[in-house]
Image (cartoon, rainbow, N blue to C red):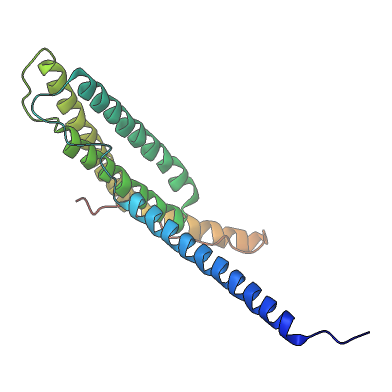
Length: 194
């Protein structure tokens, strides 16, 4: 057998290593950009279209009504997630709940900026625009009231729940029911209203 020429394989290996390095680099950059965009969009809701002017069409009204329906649905989901938060007392769940709240607030603000619900609009749909403005304001009031009540609940009940955890751990230790259950801190209620 004749020995193979090392020069032929060296160029091939160099080309292959550059190809792999380029693929890995582009994949990593794509992944980082994707994560960055996802985080940005999660924290900053972007209006779905151009700002609606003073003379709005029926299509603009329908689009703003649909956007407000999405905001309302987002609030319902956000408020329903609190049940799981209280049940588990997981600090990571509390953080996710607060991030979800921040996203909802961004969505609510973006809808208000785009549709300008409080602007006076003449025409056959003037009353509908006023009603959408009232609904937009009511959604924020509901979220604010819920958040205040949640904070009040956590402040009033957190010490009691902590005491119950300690008492339960003591009883479990006395009867030999295994290791005491880990005591987690009560969830944050997200009291920092913007």
